[in-house]
Length: 134
Image (cartoon, rainbow, N blue to C red):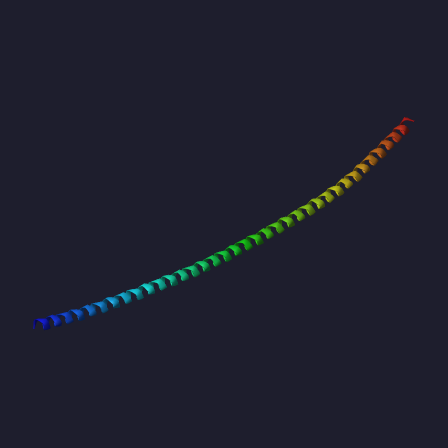
């Protein structure tokens, strides 16, 4: 009887050991599955982060290009306005110079008339003095 109890006990222990072994293997498989899932999730998260970073970089580059293009356009407009202002100023100076030259010509004519008037008056005075003296 003792042997049969030992055999029964051993069978019970073997069954229990097999049950625990199955439980450990199931846990190990579950842990391996969880580890693989975590690794896949990490890889997917890294890929998503890389894609997001690339999108942010592309967007930043595009914004930078828009800013540079806007700055170039603004510079071109400022340059064109400055050139227009310089041309207008040069035209103003040329017109003013022409006006001054006309005015100087007028003054020369007036000065000539003044000299002629003074000469005629001097001659008339001299003639009237000569007539009065004779």
